[in-house]
Image 1 (cartoon, one colour):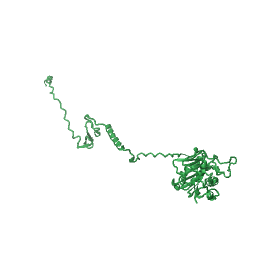
Image 2 (cartoon, rainbow, N blue to C red):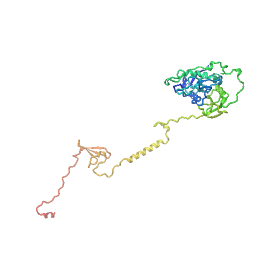
Image 3 (cartoon, one colour):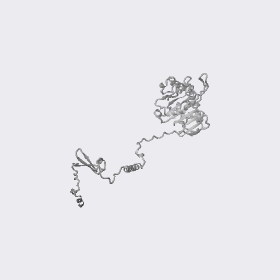
Image 4 (cartoon, helix red, strand yellow):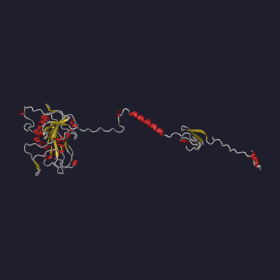
Length: 392
């Protein structure tokens, strides 16, 4: 016997947190979340429960009528994360919360709430999944019990104390009833012998694999499509109960029933936008990602830089006047080019043309020649006769 684990989506009276119950290991961002979102669609286009008395605030449905909502049947094969890697089937109903509870259906602002209540399991045979007729006729009771279980204790709790609960596998509510008497399966004696006519997207083993298109069907095809899905082994997502197909979320839907569709047809599947690749970090580019001539360009720019720097450097002055030193070591040695003195030791240091100091090893002052006394012109002494000077 297949065990089924509840999947519940809906907010409480005070907390705007929507995942109420998920099986252990199921990600709230995986394929189950996408399938539930396709059925709920933010409450858009959901039908109001039948025969609602606004004065009494109660919901009453005629005997034998079906719960108004959108029904979901989806199968996943070898994909996703956690438990999503295993073959799994999700089924349930998206509807107004008022259809499942008379006390827990509005928020603090008195707005009507919507929800999804379903079951996840790994059925081994098609009979492990209830028929469409059995589900729709008993869903108010089956889903209502699950809704009561997961909302009653936290309905008016503070948002800080409301968290997603981990649901546990349990015996399916439809397995507790008489399958034949309740219409879950057909008795062998009453099984029809007539082969149904071919249907678009349906093969001998149920649904055919679809990747790039969505199949749209009239609402009257819902029951047959549900039964085809029960025996299908390839991945698919079937949503029934739409009034306007233009309002439907087509990701990740593969089969959809809507009241405004009159003949089966296909439409392109929505394209999932891929995020742009991350930009490379500065300096983090791989060597193989460089352009072929990147190294040559780098060498060329290096050489150009050298030439520019050499042009900017000051050139040595030509024909420099005597008395001024050339090079930084000669500063302050006015009148003695290339020479600087060490007054403490009395030694001299010569600055070569390469800018290096060379010590002469001799006394600076002693190395200078003594100046000769000035030569005085010889004139004859005055004797009194001035004309003697003219004879010189």
